Image 1 (spheres, one colour):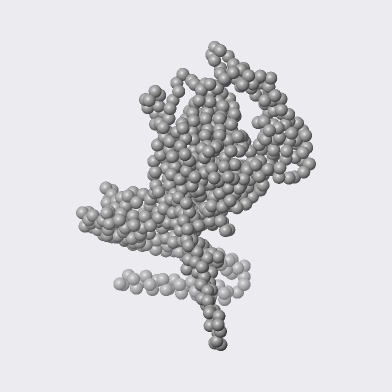
Image 2 (spheres, helix red, strand yellow):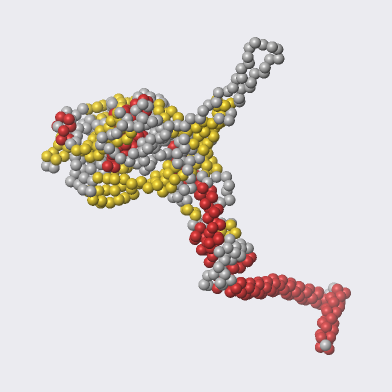
Amino acid sequence: MKETLVDENLESQKVEKEENKKEDVKDLPVTKDNQEESQKFVQSQKIDKKTKKEEKEMEEEIKPKKRGKKIAIFICVIIIFALFFSTIFALVNMNNQKMMTGITIKGIDVSGLSKEEAKAKLQTIYNEKLEKEIHLKYNEYESSLNPTLMEVNYDVDQAIEEAYKIGRENNIFINNYQILFTLIGKKDVNVNMTLNEDVTKQSIQDIGVNLPGIVIESSYYIEEDILTITRGKEGIAIDTESLLNKVKENLNDINIQENDITIPVVHKVPEEINIDKIHEEVYKEVQDAYYTKDPFTIYPEVEGVDFDVEAAKALIASEVKDEYQIQLIITKPKVTVSQIGSEAFPDRLSNFTTRYDASAKDRTTNLVIACQKLNGKVIMPGETFSYNKTLGKRTAAAGYKNAAVYENGQVVDGIGGGICQISSTLYNAVLMANLEIVERRNHQFVTSYLPAGRDATVVYGAIDFKFKNTRQYPIRLSASAKNGIATISIYGIKEENEYTFSFNTKTIASIPFGTKYIEDSSLSAGTEKVKQNGVNGLKTETYITKMLNGKVISTTLLSRDTYDAMQKIILKGTKANATTPTTPTVPTTTTPTNDKPEETTPTEPTTPDTPSTETPETPTTPDTSTKPSETEAPSTQTEN
């Protein structure tokens, strides 16, 4: 204590001495010696201030470090305490078969649930999600996508396993980290959602074909000696990738109640007419028919086809219009197959038939026109056949009639109805002749003239049916439509090994149709009328079995097809009932009548034909019932 007091006295004396010295320096007379003394004093004062400043700065630097050290020590203590607590928590719950507290799966609380209980809870929620169709809309156009047809799957089992492992890992540090997460807040586990992107994109593209105002690409066809080129029309196209992403977002979010998506579209301009490319595809050199004996090979005649390219370019450039007609230069061969005998196509390689309603005159006309254009068509080895280029654009000028078509999920009249039945009949004949399918798409809805998985739709300028002659020899088509039977046969020369084929279609999923009510002012209020029967949607897999001399060589997947459900449409009457006239108060000899509105009796459409999977050599009597599903869409719609 005495030493402390002595130090304090010495320090105070020192300070007092310094102060006195300052006063003495101030009071000194101004002499040379005094000036030197004053300068020395000022200099010492500066050094003293600098030293104090540095000391202060050092103190300022030391303070945060001390504060940070205290905080670090505090955090370490908290972490050690938390680790100790979480370790105790983990040991206590080591034999617990329930989910840890604070765990959610896709936002769904599963705390304290067993695996089985959590799975049941999640499956109930996700099953409801799978049962809801995604409704698509573009202006007045509406369509839908079905999760089942898109093969949507939620991996609930994996999510449950991941959630259950939280706090149960072999590594104690991972355990503690996970448990701390659940204790402090919530640990959310994701549910992986997958879908078949190829199938979904195809469904989106099918919907895109039916959109009003879609882009039409430029195309051409040949009618006798006239080349007709149709100019494309700019329009819209579905933004497939954007819509696919929107669908994924919808399916991933279980909290979305309204499954409505506006169809994203992009403006699209068709490709310009390319005369050089068309000439390259159209041009053929004339060739006489001939054959060789060793080996025996038939080479059918080829008509020479050419046109003035420069004149065609000038015609296209001179005027912008929808259609251009160019005169072809046709050179006839001197020798034809008919002149060298029946040896040209001696063998029938395949034959396939479908039925149609012969009483539907306009539709029958369309089928006959399609068969006439196919009949006698020769496809050389390695050559690819195009249905659209062979038939040309479906127009009234070409002789096509209005017949029932599908438009926006309803049956209406449209040009060219029925020709998809011929493309589908040809598809089956091609398969049975062992030819390669280059391009084929199934219809949007199940047809009545063929079972699911065996049809081939076409839309001029959008969807084509193509096949390639992969046989050693040329082939010739024979097509006819008469007496309610459409028949297509393929003739050629049999090869060393000729195979037979059978088909098997499996239904993977069936989607029930919905019902739509439309108000109709022509029907009395309270009455209903069925305008269109519903048809279930399907997801199918079709297999083709290849056989040689009755022995199975192979069974392979031919196609996977999805068909939308076609809704049932019921007209609901809104017409007000007529009122009963008031009885006059004055006597009269006329007996008043009680006018009563005439009720409209609901009528059901006729039952669709049952599709036949057989291809009889001798056709049976056709079913003459009229059926909506035996329809075809106009060039801007899916042709059925």
